[in-house]
Amino acid sequence: MQKFIIATVAGALLLSGCASTKAISPEAQEKIRKEQATYEQNVYRVKQQSQVDVGNAKVNLIFRERTLAIEPDLTIVQRKKTAAVAVLITVGIVAAKGAYGGDGFSKDDLKGKKLEPALANPILDYAKPDFEQWLLSNHDKLTPQDKPLEKVTVTPRRFALIYTKLVGKESYELNNELIITLQNSWDNRKAYEYLCDVKSAAKTLPEWQANNYQAVHEAVKQNIQSCLNNLDNQQAQIYKSLS
Image (cartoon, rainbow, N blue to C red; front, side):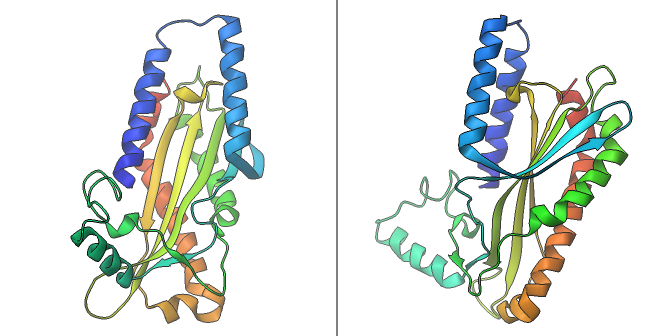
């Protein structure tokens, strides 16, 4: 899954680079703007939006969900799911390649089962103050002065407990995914996208569910910080892409 997303982003960046080499007419620009706005309205739902004052400019910080969210509530992928899929692959009902990724079957590609009691993904609620502070500290390192940062968008993907091993004590890692999009242009094709795919330390299911999922909430907060640390390491690539 992660490899596919990264390849897609790389392709988008390549196309945006090609698009930036020639000027487009005002009519063509207006058409692209409308197409992009329609796509955004149909595919995403904004949960929170604010403007971060970074001195001489303001950065739009948008937290959104896909209208058809991958996992709006916490799900669990148990190892018995892998056993079931392995049987299907063995008898030829499901192909090892194609159905679960280009390089073969992976447990990270499996769809989880919604846990009860339900827990809605809280990551966007926790992310807002941390991302605002990150922008205040790093905005001037991400783009040239003559092309300031205009918009940062945060979109969650996976929110799942995924088993660690096929044998031994059954435990689960919390898998959080966030897609971070940074823009200093109206054209979405020129945005820089980064996938944060963070896995927390393994715990048993009762440990994750104790005290109304307290361990999940704490892990989500830690994963946001890990994501921002990863973005710190991407600053040179972000700057180059948005120059």
